[in-house]
Length: 355
Image 1 (spheres, rainbow, N blue to C red):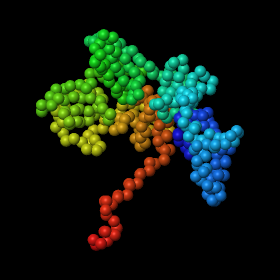
Image 2: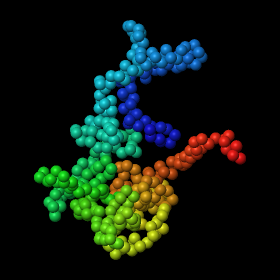
Image 3: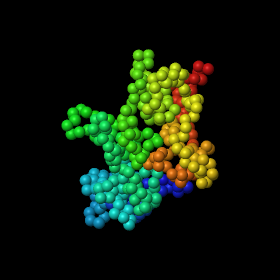
Image 4: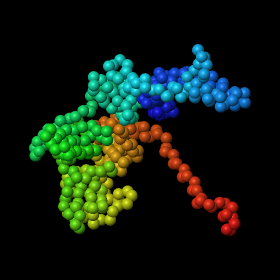
């Protein structure tokens, strides 16, 4: 479900479930059936009907003949071979030749064998023909960047399940065990702007700097940002640029410092992008790198970039929209801690005896 103000908007998956129920379990979602069920439940509550015989008929079906005979739940769910999963999860987009499909990894659009994922933050009522065309026009397929001058292998940028990345295409005569080099794009990069030079630099990661104290030192890009690693020890880097510029001497100085706990106490990293003023507040907006990924901020309100947002392509309007949504979002509620359970064998009575 999508929440917009106080209203809840059904998701694409909800539409697929409704289509499945209406097409193959129609009698269970029929208004007359639900009305009869309420009457029967009321009779059972008043003691005027037996619940076990009714549940037996509901599950196994009635054993009568003719029009009065009804199939039970067991029969309905026992044979689902005639259900076409693709059909019940496909919805034509009105006024276009585009079909919205609900797949295993989320909704996507399909047209003439071309596919494009629908971002998680787009509700069904927001998917207009214009928005669909915009999604199709975004770079989604393979972007051929050119050959690697050293190996001759073609370097390609792709949109993967876990984000955009670059990889090399191995020749047909490559050994079966050979694995192509690949690397995720940095937060400051996007599919429509990445170059062959950028890709070749990414494919050098993790970069080996040398040895310190008998252990190899490398720099690499991780889930929470760039970092240097020495054995089992690691240190966060201040910027993505250090992945390609950090020297062994600088790494030695970095590892000589105590490892920071919690929030960094050093100088703040520079913003990834400066966007301009927020139309609503007039405050300057920037994109920064956070512990859980990039986010936009005006100095007071922080809003994480959502799936489909690229650091290099976020506009002023989009940034202002994210901040506005964050300001109107309800405050997060803390979950109560579960009550602690007494150890096995300990009771209030035994505790009172001890006292």
